Amino acid sequence: MVATTMLNVSKQFISVHPEELKFQFELEKQSFCDLKVTNNTDQNIAFKVKTTSPKRYYVRPNTGVLHPWDSCVIRVTLQAQQEYPPDMLCKDKFLLQSTIVSPNSEVDDLPQDAFNKDSGRTIEECKLRVVYASPNSTQGSADEDSINKPGRGLNAQGNSSLEDKQIVQRVKEERDAAIRQTQQLQQELEMWKRRRQRRNNSGFSCKFALFVALIGIMLGILLKLSFSSPTTP
Image (cartoon, rainbow, N blue to C red):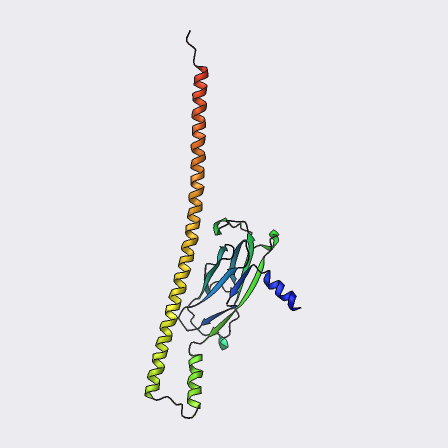
């Protein structure tokens, strides 16, 4: 039984980390979660992200192509909400589909039925659940433990130290978010360069073919004129 499970895992086209989407939920504030998607094969793998609540989330990129053993970061942004969900529970779901595509394929080359099971393709699906967390939940439990333990109450100096730690933690989170954003922009720039290079190569091939055709026509005309011109006695 264990061997069978390991075999199925090894055949997965892509792997996703983390396996759930966790958002720090605050009213009227956006929150985001990054997913790292990795191609586990030596073939090009196309992926697409779907959700049961498309108006609530912004996914970038929601479709892409991973080259062999390559990876990318998908950023899922929770739009600002006007009210808390009941009991902070979320019923939203995400579905990550993946399929094998032809070598050197890019996003613009994907057929419309690339993720349609009726097309005969092998489509793998990974379901991801959504979890909402209050930004003060962790800190609140820590403060409660400190108050309940004898001799561990916070005085004015302790409050100041706690605030300093919170500031440092916030700066670290902002730094990490900036790093992730930079990495995502670099990946999108690389993808854009690949598309531009392919288009330039395609344009060059067309121009070259046209140039060869014009030379052939000109040679044909010259040969026709040389054969049709009267010979002098």
